[in-house]
Length: 203
Image (tube, rainbow, N blue to C red; front, side, top):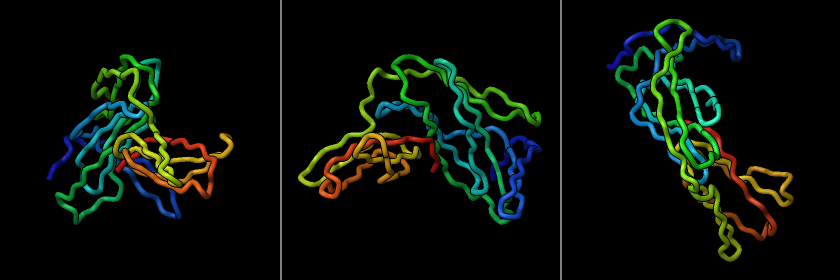
């Protein structure tokens, strides 16, 4: 059984349907792997961590200033599982950094400090974005079928949207993680435009 080196006595109380649940900040996460890939024209911060089944990694929204990015990450615990000993799962998250111009950037990762309410710098990672990492969405015709291929990374959330006017868009398919393909019949809607919305996600 792995124990965190210290425990912050910080609680976030949220009322939901008549009860209050405490969320405890355990400390900064311990990563199994981290990467900053660019694929399909989008750059992501992807990280994995093995945590107890009661825990999860909470990520605040990514903050950008010119070519510098920063994000606050913490290992959290909700309801304590007294009968779970050495019960772990691997959690992978993908934070969208955006459609960035080619060049050099920097990501700073922050976590909670041992002092209640404080933060500390965990590490700073320079990274480079290529000038072209290809399209996010590729549409091909095969008879009456339209195949949409979406490029991306595991854990990020993708929603394919369709429109006949380029003004009113409706979701037609969603997926957790990419790459993936979706096929539809164009006879039901012969004139369609497609796009994909990408957001940060976790699995």
